[in-house]
Image 1 (cartoon, one colour):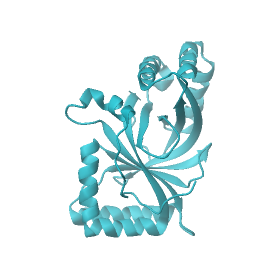
Image 2: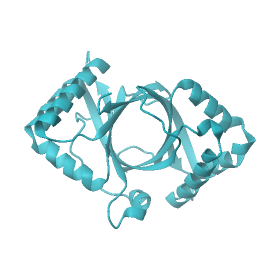
Image 3: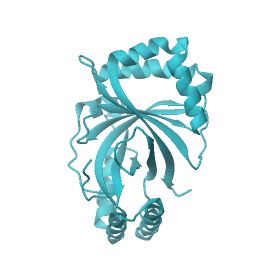
Image 4: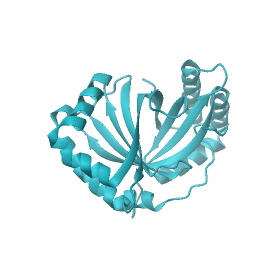
Length: 253
């Protein structure tokens, strides 16, 4: 994957897709739902996670100096089945307007430009935007230092639409709510809205550790209670799965 030399607030051409409007239609009269900035990155020669966290610390200090409240941010690092990248950085924005206003404020500030230069010294990144929708949020998940992310990159099967995906999400939400193993579990749907990726959507689940991931995946793959949902997934989507370590990086823990 060839990455452009961009950074966690790079310029984009914001083109909304029908899928994005569908996800946000319930609140479209006022605001969209959450918009995520997604940065798929490779380290520059000799850089590593410690350097990225140094750039993060500098970024936070620069934002405080500028009087800007930074977006919540997360970093995923690959475990298995992942694309050829070193990490993904996500900025969570409450809605599309929050993204646009925050971007302009950041880009116009000397502090933002200095933070960008520090990020550029550590990595090269390709940016995209995605609309995010909660699928299931179980009991209080807490704020662990590190989590396991099970992610599925999916394309719609022939004849299927985002309306069929929403039916699948409703089905999935119902099954998850009945599963004791998923009482403390998070699941989300993300739909790319500005992206070159040949993917229609992503679904991902958040686990406290690998043992939880293994137990839940075993239930999904083998339990008769999940058999109808498995067939529903096969009808609507074709997916490729991957595993990541995830951590919140802003606010810094």
